[in-house]
Image: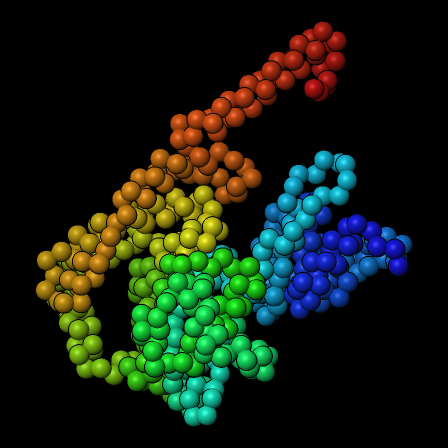
Length: 435
């Protein structure tokens, strides 16, 4: 079969990601071919058709508009499929083949966009394995840039996985067992996240968890997630700190319904924290007393409680906004939302000032407003930017003189063409003339 240049581009991208649905940008559409199209079309709810490519006959295909791809990809992710985006990385000139490259790899456990996430639920990518009577796991929520490690008795692994409810789970034999080697994990933590010593993250006695963390980091790197020092919050937790709840207990307690009924949180961050607390009750008496002390003070002081709740409502989902910005995926509107969240932080700290409960005083003292970043975002972006970057106009006039010059030249060119069009209509008498 004769292979056209476009078909060669598609084949080369597909060979790199054989187990993923490949969305291939062609003009105003992302097109999907061959077996990918056969499998994806019914999931996305689009028509399966065919298209001639070269001299090899017609190929099964389906397509979606490029400006609406996220909603269709969401359906594929919810069905448990991995998705690869192969985009045009240069403007078409009409001469020769347009250059294309894989720009995103999306899997259920590695998405960060709000469209694919539940605001009140974490989105964990989990790696887990057992060795003898012990088990190790690492749970990464890329949407909040956190990586948790845990080593626990093998008998408790199943209940811990049920609690975490991973969006994606990496285990042997689907993942080669050698990739869980603890030494390999130490190398990945040091190389990719800058964690030089296991003790720095409390993992000196959790080698199996370190091995699982290595699998997570390998998987993220293979799926083109940018990894750098300082990006993740990394820590190790002990299974002994909380009470294990197996599936029967969760069912008998009607825990999901309890979470729904008790959730009166003001922010998505609070909703996720409440879910984590109720699904893993504390066992340490001192920690329980600290938490209850904070609750009791807010209950005794309705004024402080109302002030704090009002301040928190202005925060939005600061955790995920920060993570998307750090990974380079935040839109202009999300950056404005981040700025407003940062500007709301001083009011939260002020509402906690003078609190007696140790937990509240500690939280208030840890709040940093990052006023410099908020001021930079305020100077750089207009207050109500357009929803899509392609529309332009998000940068505030006066922030970048070079960009202002480009805008002025573009505006002048449009005005000149409009004047020429009017003059030519008057000269020729052709009212429908277009320039």
